[in-house]
Image (tube, rainbow, N blue to C red):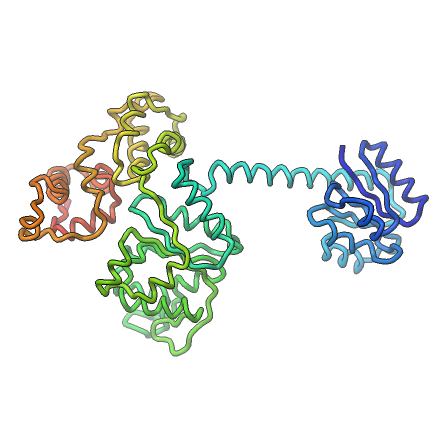
Length: 459
């Protein structure tokens, strides 16, 4: 039974409306003015307010501001287009002219109540989803992940710049997307940029744009990705790889809210929220002089640190089920399940590539499985110790013979394992499969090839 408040100064009309609505199964209360209604009732307890426009004292539309969240249906004997528009602008859900047909009134009342019920149901479902998965695509109930979810919830509504820290594969972009989706900028664009994937010579032009003739080949003016994110969020992944000139331009944008295209003489105002992410040790890079200290402080207004998967092993079973469902849907198969020994292998593996490695392993297993059950063998989690060493370090290390002699590195060091594995398998594996088997991204594979001087074979 819905609760309806009727505000009407004419007793005869008010009584008639009461009888009509009671016969339709509603619980009806009455008032003769806005003042009487606000004094006698808790307005937010009603499902609908049906109010005359012209009342003693305040007009009926004043009730709208006094009961936020409760739909208000306005009635009047002086129906004009202007008065209808004015009422709707003030927040009325609809407008009905007197004298009205009883059936027409009941239809409008039922429609408004039905829409209100759907709105409340959707809000309740949204709350349930947010409680189960506070950050879209991220699964976890461990203390570390609950802290991440809570920080996202607190920070998202603010315009503050956020620095997301975590190893490769932990889900830093998902956090950036959640910050955008839960912010007032959710209807604006979210532009994601991998700073390590754009060649250094093109990075400034891609980020900040260029004017016609700014350099050879610049045949037309080109707005950059910063301008493309105007009114929304710019996600700068791998911010630690940003070269010095681009760091200076980014700092200027953060300080002044302006961007100057390459080759331009004037700056342009931009309204962009920055979310940056890195797996690098930025304080160390600041000490080394490869990253600007003032930019670092500008970026870390709020810091969100994502734990590696090995530090939240209690989340692995739920995460595996979520990723299995996703992988099964992707390849068009019925949802697979994990055999007990596969779940045991999964929970004991160190996952140096974190969630990305787990997702790749499960997708490969679903593809190769003959039935709906994924066995431990299909996960192909061989050499966990060596793989753990491979993913343990994210900062460059000195691999010279002198450094190895000083550190006393074992022959089967991280670099040694990587070099041997790549050299043995690159003839019959592509880069994507190599990266999957090593539990790292293709970009990380490319970086390690460059660092260790391992050439890529040509087909």
